[in-house]
Length: 348
Image (cartoon, rainbow, N blue to C red; front, side):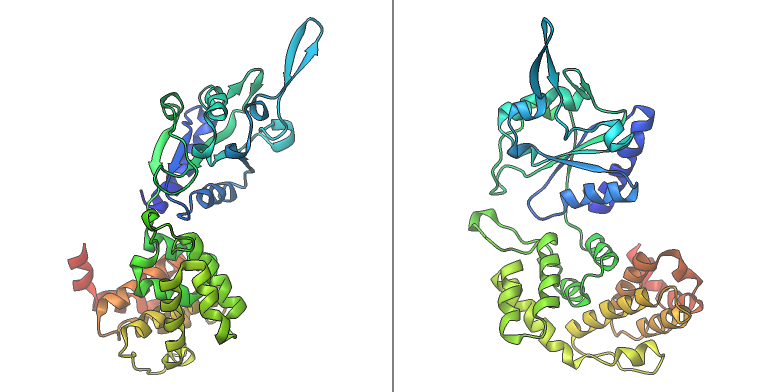
C-alpha cells in the first residue's frame, strides 16, 4: 500500500482509540522505505508523544518488569518506558519497532501487551495507539518468523514505495530540488534493493535523504561529491546523480521564468525535469509573500510551454501537492487547465 494511504490509516487508527475501536497495526517492508518515519509523522500531526520501544534490544524481563516482594505476595514493577498517563499524557503512540528482530522469548512477552493492552497489572492508557514495524524475511536483516499468535494480534499492511508520495514529502521537508528532479528523471531508482547481491549502500527513500545532506556538505567540493553520494545511494546511483547535477549549469534562468519573461524550454529531458522541480521549489518559497500569486501564475504559464504536455502536468501536480488548494485561486490556473484538458481527460 502506498505511503499516503497508510498515513490516513494510521491517523484513523490513532483517532479510534477514543471510541475503543483501535486495532494494533503492523507495517511490513524492506529497510529504508519509511516505516518508522510514518509512525513519527502520525505523532507529529496529532501533537502526541511517540514511545519507541526496540524489542530487538530487550529481554523478556524488560517488558514484564522486575518482581519484588510485597508482604506475602510478589508484585511487578512495570518498566518506566511503557506509557503512563501521568508521565506521558492521556494519548500517544506506543511504537514497537524492529518487532520481527526480537527473539521469540521477547515477542511472546508482548502478546498480552498488544492484544489485551495490559501486561500483568500494567494497563496501556486508553488513548494510546499501538503500532509496530519490521522487515520481512529475505530482506537481509536479522529477522525471526512472526509467531502466529502474535501475527493474529495485528492488522497487517505492506509498505510500498511511491514516487509521488515521496516527492510530496520531499518538498515538505526542503529536500534538495536536484534530488527530486533526478528521481523524476529516473523514478526506478527511488528504491532499488536486491538482497541477493548483498548491497551495503543502495537507493531508498531514506538514503536519498542522506544524498540530500551530502549535497549540502560536499556540493562545493567536486573531488569529494561523487564519493559522498555513492556512500549514500550506492556506486551506480551516486555516479548518475553526480552527472545529473554537473549538467545543470545549462539550465535556463529561473529568475526570468518566475518574473514572467519569455524563456525557451531546454531540449534535454533531464534539464526539463530539473527546471520543473526547481520551479515547484520557487513557488513553495514564495508562499506567504506579496509575490506569491504572480510567481505561481508565471510558473503556470511556463508549464504550458513544455513540448511534452505531460511534463507540465507533472509540474502542476507536484505544485498542487506542495501548496494545496490555493493553486486553484491563481487566475492562470484556468488557462493552463483548458490548454491541457484533453491530456487530463485521456489520463482519467
